[in-house]
Length: 348
Image (cartoon, rainbow, N blue to C red; front, top):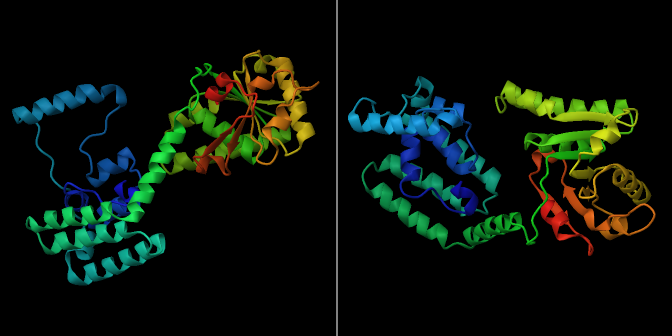
């Protein structure tokens, strides 16, 4: 992921990775910084074993002992296919490959980020200079990148994002086990999906069964796509689905379900009167500690939380603004109003 910080993989990364998985696969990883699924990593030769989390420590110890005793053979780089040998190891193939790589880098960076170009340069230099000079060249390029304004800015963004993830309040968050989502539209269904994927029990409620059904279909379709692309197991698909309880105004038991909610996220139309009415409905059926979060992007949180006939617990109200489409946008904006309690803010 160094490219995301305006750097290149140091300590021989630009030389050892292509030797291990091939030039094309190595460049794809280094130039994008994207994650590689465990099964794909095993297939491409990036890792030797893939084990269940519960077995990791045991297998790691056994493998280390086996390597020390000589009973476990050291892995070797995976043999290239004929096509990859033609592309990566012949002058005509390399000519086409480097042209394609440059086109991709130009398109993705717009020529504004020096790190991708330096990574490509290091890999090309290493292929042409198989001795120790390639590592010296990599060190020099890394030092140049570390001194660029682009790297400084990207590292600043990275640090800022991590800082924003840390709570800015000292109050302890409430223990949240059950989350209710009001509104099963595109936004509400997306919120319900990512919440279920995080392991919470989810109550998804809308005014009628038809609207609710569309929301459930949206989540199911997204999980089906993940399953098809092998980004989710069938077991996880079933677990996520089982965590979501669909409810509508016609569901007689919806109030009983909401009585156990620790957090309610509202994702209905941008209408102040409607949102305050939702607050009133929620406060009537939820426990006193329940936090009410509104997903509004236009209405001031203070207006929604203003004490009155509809709002009795303004200290529990906070803004949780998701960005659409929620499953694809890992960004959440937390917006308190002047009266939001520390516990509610920390919980959000």
